[in-house]
Amino acid sequence: MTRLFSEGRVMMCDIIAISSCIGIEQLSGKYSYRFHFKGVYRGSPIKEIRSCPSRCLELMIGEEYILQLVPIIVEHKILLVKVKRFTRLGDHRILL
Image (cartoon, rainbow, N blue to C red; front, side, top):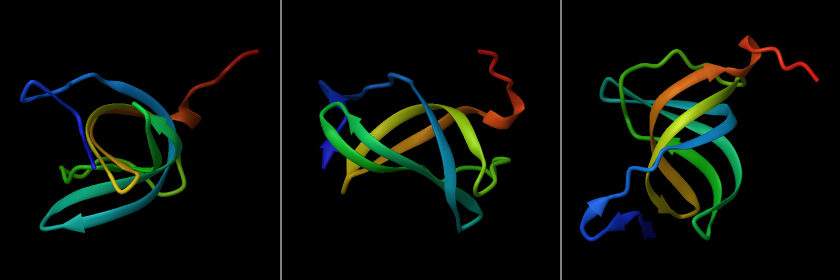
């Protein structure tokens, strides 16, 4: 487990990720979202991003999103985050 603390305070550095939603769990009226991710965050290998339980967001399984996240903790190769903002990737056109 890697805690993201600096002198007793939680580090609030936002990160941006492009990922697809792979799961939604409802817990006591709040929702937790799971996102596909394989990589490294601050030296820790990550296999999935999971959001803290929060209000219902308009996210759908299988859709890809640009996510602005606040990292909280890395545990068992899962990055636990707070979802700050999101936008569906299909809503944007990329011109090359």
